[in-house]
Image 1 (tube, rainbow, N blue to C red):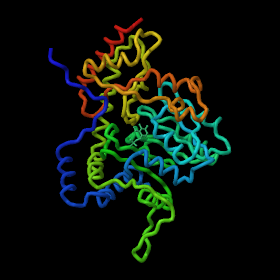
Image 2: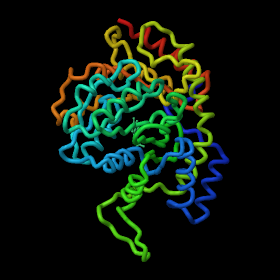
Image 3: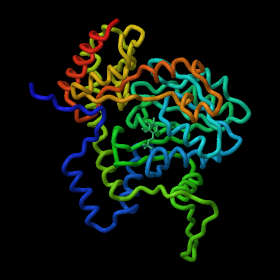
Image 4: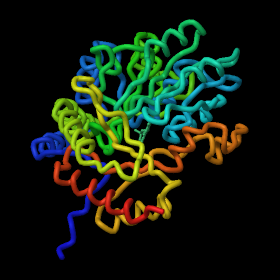
Length: 379
Ligand SMILES: Cc1ncc(COP(=O)(O)O)c(C=O)c1O
């Protein structure tokens, strides 16, 4: 029997005209940050309702800079969802603040706002929710709470560029919003990330924080008053980002169609927890399709399930481990049992292949393989 084509769980889609456009930048000699970075920022700003946008080398850099811009450091607490990527807790700790982890909804994975409200204290300076593909949670309630308690919001929108909330793109409203352009995301600049902000003064501060802390003086010399990092995105990457952003509507439509196919083809026995079912016109972007395995009724482990898929050429991911149970998280006094939904997701989640280069037949193949393996692994 011929070996089936390997299916990646995430992959960028880059066409030949884009490769040629990037090659032109390489040939031009102007390869680091310059006009294409400015163009990428202008295009993203138009996408985000005209707000200020600064592009950096990753969403990790964007979140670190956002925390610094908000003046967050030692002695401060930042509330965040423990069902997210390591970036979030890493950057909170890196700026010297204390992460306060809260739980999330089992299906939508949105941060539990009731728990956020209970955990806001005198040292809380910010809330970082991670937005999940398929559902954005109640941003009205989040911002009402933040305003009432005088705390900043840094929206980790790494997974959801293109999701809409009350008719507007994520990023067009809110406080500081960050995006990722890693190759696994909905659009890519190889590595890359962005911050969206309202304040011109804070945007100027981002300019310094992403480039050595340098301020240009009227006499043509430069000064540094605080140590900035080196997070400027090169033009080669920005050129790719510009092309990818232009194709975002096409990528989103493709991802939505594939998610629709997952729901059509998924065999519900034995019962896995699926992401929230899309509603026509709900405007959600889909970066991942992550299920929860019914581990209690399976005779095998998640690793065995994933290995069985891999044996059929189907790659999967784990998104995400529980941040409060990482060695770093436990340093802040957290234990197993503290955040039950986060832990159940971390223990049983599997991210199935989803990207714009997949076909409907690929999804059918994944669904059939999952059904067969799950049936064979039933207790
Ligand atoms: C939810 C989330 N936030 C932030 C990041 C960090 O993105 P980057 O790789 O661009 O630093 C990731 C990366 O996978 C992520 O999944």
